Picture 1: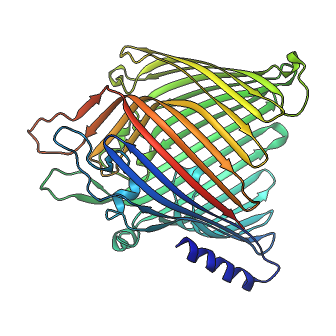
Picture 2 (picture 1 turned 180 degrees about the vertical axis):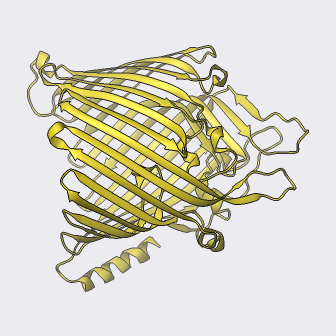
Picture 3 (picture 1 turned 30 degrees about the vertical axis):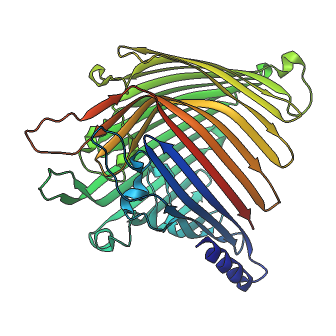
Length: 485
């Protein structure tokens, strides 16, 4: 498919005339994953094409082909061990059960834009509205220097559009959105409003043997954000959002740069006010807003100090910095606290060194002290990298505290707490238009839970969650070749 696409590009472009500018890229990727008694192999190819007919009119396309090379069975053995690639399956596998070759268009739109107004038609991702792609039209205008307004409407995008054409196009699904930006740069003040209404076909889970309940859901999402830049040493902001009439979250921050001290700072306060259970059993495009979290609050402070002035280092690229971070997180309801939803305090200290001969070194130490349910963590990591004219090599270690994954069939959920990763990366620019890269990594998850949400009947009690406290190793190899034209 990628070769055919490339041939079409080179056949089509000359017919547009010499005045049309263009750029494009094709990336081919192979990924191997092993672990949890499973092996998964996937091949991807991504395509980007930009056509610029004038300084006002353009067309952009970004899509990708994917082929899963594994089998189709999704089952668990009598001992609880995965017999296939359940550990690696995601939404593409859930909707493409035979794992045949598929092509997804991420964005594809024709855009016209001037200083005062503009619009686009096609497939677009309005990420500021906490939404994925939609097929439709978007218009915007700037009637005053201090005001920008926009609106859009269309059909919400779904996996398996063609296979369920009747459901997705014949049941009255649609979305409408609008936004306004109030810009007062002289006062350093900006105010943003966003609103989205989604009418979407969804369903609730049902007991085995019962008919699934399909229905049209209607949801409203609103967001408001204000930012105030007093000076380069003080920038502040506040964001809040609602799902229907229920508050989703509140986020506030302050940051700045103190040039005389070569010091940067950032303070953030975040509170999630909505529980994932507030969405009920239904799976909609808004379900991903909250991931798997109960209500919680988080505060964090970051400091970064460069010592190039103290060391009197000269030369482009020579620098050494110290980074400090403190973070506090806690569920707002004590009953929600668990091994996988902890209350903790985190302290991190790290250093970055860069030299003019293109050597880079990063080291860090992090300590996480949990309260109640204990999962204290001490970890050391970092990266050493070297960049030559055409090759960049990176060797390092990183970790994450929590990762939540579901196979999107609403039957299996996996939650991992504290996984250490060791990786090797390499990127090689063979030619101006061709580059190659690979990443190989080994990961060990220290604590995990595997939850089954299958409903048996109303009276049978089953063990729903298994806590797995033995280390679970994973290995990943990712190879990519890219071509620009």
